[in-house]
Length: 79
Image (tube, rainbow, N blue to C red; front, side, top):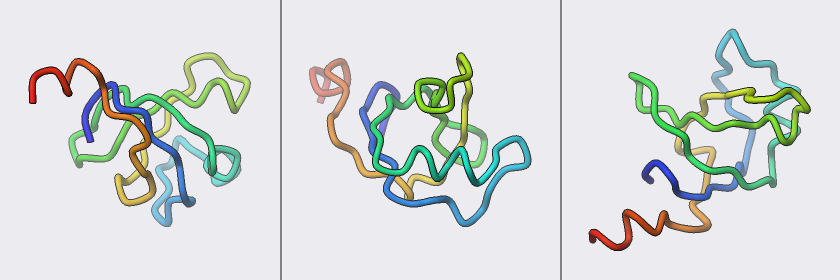
């Protein structure tokens, strides 16, 4: 998984970060987002504002809670 990949949230994280609520994660399950980055622990950062209704709302989630549905074209071209 790399920045720019499209991923689907497949389950709610069992380890929620303080800045995110379970309801935000629940709303995201089944939806597809673009990977924006990774935090220091290797968790995936995604902008979920399209679901939450708050512009640029970011969550961090374990990679195990996601499935890649489309690889980034820039990364595919360099492989």
